[in-house]
Image (cartoon, rainbow, N blue to C red; front, side, top):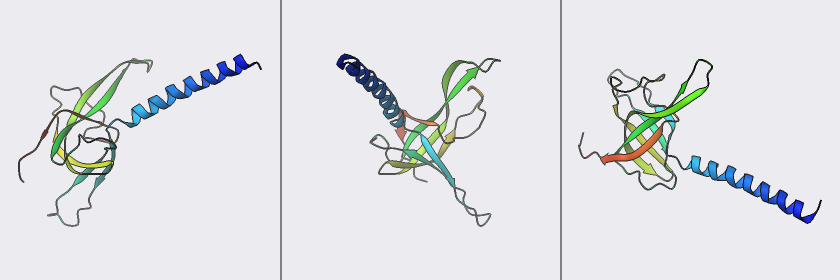
Amino acid sequence: MSKTQLLNLFAVIYIIFGVFFSRVLAASSDIEVVEVKRNIQLADTDPIYKDFYINAADNSTLKKNLIVKATRKISVKNQGQKVIGTFKTTVGLLKIIQVDGGVAVARLFELTPREDQPMLEQTGIMIGDQIDTDGSFIDSKKK
């Protein structure tokens, strides 16, 4: 193999790895729900809590008492199961109750009514839902 062929091969490999890793890093910077936990109710009077764990790595936009939108990407498919388009819809609002390191914990603030929104296959906020901080606000009400 000549030097030019070898250099061309390395250039192609470098470009392929560069594109791949840039996409991986871009995808990992998205803020999303990574886990959902619910407490065990020992008595009928015990409150039920559902915690949503959010990856907040290198993201200083998440603060305690911040209300953020949880959105879900919906794929529209034709009869042949070919994706003809995608869109995002708001599932609900979450209230951040703690931020520590690369993880934030949130609780359900409000589910978005589906009367004027597209229906969802799975209601409620779930793992994989994206967190949108556009239009977020601080909840100043004391419970």
